[in-house]
Image 1 (spheres, helix red, strand yellow):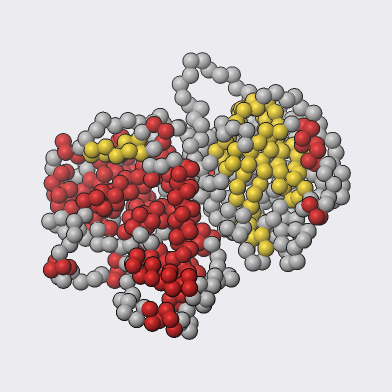
Image 2: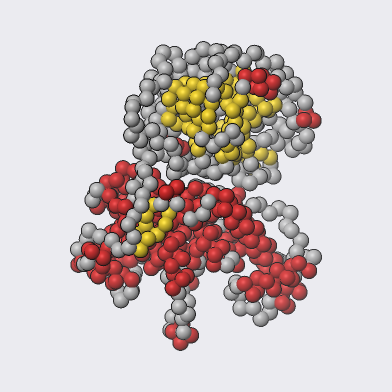
Length: 590
């Protein structure tokens, strides 16, 4: 969604501020409409389910104990209403259908193509979704929003009520079935058409369905023309990256939902159906009656179970998870001067994408106040900046020794951060590695940098290694530029203006506590976080260049052994609600 409900607006809405409630509904409504519309492909029930979802939000908002989880909670309600519809849906008599003309505007795939201006392979992906089964379309409605950057993988899993690993398996299967459907669409749209496929589909009315999907797929398996994979197919997740939400239809309005949902008069509720286009004897009229009976409003709601999973309860006592308060991010300060980067990696910074990362809360009550390890003086006065690549044949200086103790990670000895919202909290004293994996073949474009939040103590950027900067030309590549940032046939990962070019391995030293946040939106990337020691780092930095092994250059030492050693960009002592909003120029010395 374009405007996300902030913690402050949600808390104000919970306290009875009608303007804040309207803003919360207005921010959440496009997300709900896209989830429900795509899951049901524009079925006439879409508007009713969207209205029902938002009204349940109004009635149950006071039960949400953690405003940072609002989006997960909101989507979980929508998915529950979709499943409820599937359970209670009754067959419609043919006589009734005869009096209900088809509504072309209800086709959500068509709306997606038209309103977002999709063409080429993007249009092909949208058309292919018509061929998915109902369960797959429900998952698609969430995965589509994850790929476009509107949801995190954690929010997707919470909406499904599944674990992250199980969700990953389901998403992978969905992607495989979507690619099969895309090949079917290509075969049907081929010019000139396949004569055998034309003969097979002569009696087909053009409506996608499981029977014709199987028949056409069977034909493709035996047809050298229709069954040959296209050579230039781009993965769906790359095609969908950065797409906007389908705009709301004119009939859906937050003020009308607010009038219906609670706090409004019965007269206001009675007038609302005209605003939202609802049948006055249908859902809206029933809800208007509920408004006049406050005791009924609390009969059903969404409650948050332990562990972040959402469970719907009808008339049950709510259970809640503990909130995770956020604190404001400090203002940035100027970075140290450095030569500008000559690489094409820098570009205008993309708008940071809000992320609902479950960052560790430091505001929980404690028996005793913990002494702060915040340093004073020169620490933090030197901040990383964009820089020229060093001579690849220059042997690095020795890494200055620092005291090594025990460093613990919230995600174990090898944390793999794949999705926006993933976090790793590190505590103790010692070195650690952040290994970069850029995946432009999956999704190129502007990269939203990871950020460091909640620093208590000192964090230094001590060295860079791994045998390459990610913008180095690949030794065996024939195209140019063809680096670990991308290639002409895949597109390129593009860094924000002023961001320091990452190496394969970046090395850091921590004395205190810090949380690393994965903020992926746009370009696809992974981070691997592992403990390290000074000898291991030295060995990596001093590996000689070897083109056949993919080692392009020696490593580079940044540490000088003092508090004037550089700190990484995107570092803050605050724990903002949205980690992606941390300023590029760190300010941690005060």
